[in-house]
Length: 417
Image (cartoon, rainbow, N blue to C red; front, side, top):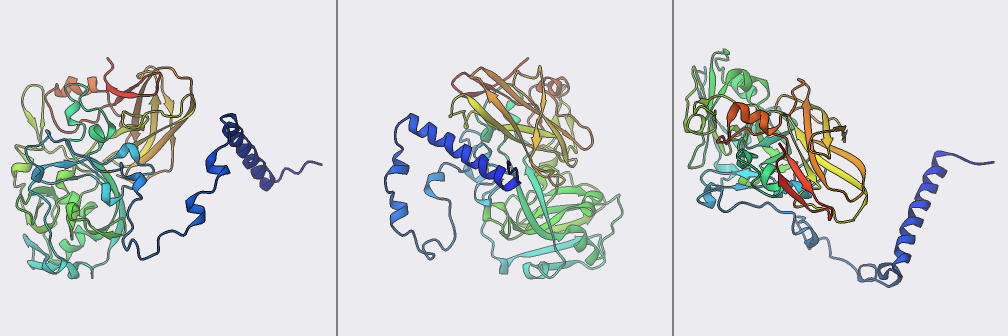
């Protein structure tokens, strides 16, 4: 009688897998990692006091943020790109999460922090950090993407790596107080014709105008990320979170919220962060980050290193309009598409991880991914975007990305017509 219980099936599968692994090792001779004693199995490891704050092991030393030196004139107004090619899942560790600053990252103590709420309010108020902690708080996972992410690619394939083409993004779990809570607390005039103007405590202040409707919807005054205090470069001790909208509006070191009856039209929402069209006119108020995706592996910084056979294609998709409902993957430059497997249904306005499991025969590939969100918006090709925007734009480039993979498994940033 054959016993086909789940436990036996799983045990049998494990034995088969182990046998295959042993067979491969024996084919190349005895494996010294199995046949010879290793130091880690003989000697004790580090004590618990050796690393009071846990850091990545030295073998993961290459998983770091990087910048592009020629992209900005000075590092005090620059960008650090997330190593999305080396990460998996969806949550970005704070230590390697994208950040953009306009006048350097400042060190501001909790004890010295103040947030003013004024303008069209009944009770103009100033809150300390510790005042904010006393309000009811919420926890949400959101992506933060710079409007200039992929901006260098308008005129052609420029930067060779997912970290550099799409790494101006992170996805973290934020904890904080809803902006609407503070507005209600001070008796703000919440008429939908009004706006809120927010600015930071750093030298640039980075003032931005936000429609009242968005302010009341889901904006968060955040003081924790991934369970711990914000990093200095992410706006410690308090930043604004504006889910689904361009990262420039996520003002760091938030110091003032003013309720006003019209948009301020500051530098960062007029001469910057507006979309220049092909005829030279500028389109304002394009805050939402449309559906977008990218294959992170294989990619130029993450080539195929194991040869032919089983291959897991992995990537990220996101939309400022809500949830990602489907991702298609093409291996032939968009001629044919296969629906990828979503690892799990992500939160709204958060990153979603997708996978496509396949067998690679060593042939050349033109890898692409195409995201679709809950509004049925379909990620466009670069040609479709150029028909409307030309080639001299900067912001909101959510085009389909193409990686050419050669027979050796190396990948390169290319365009397909």
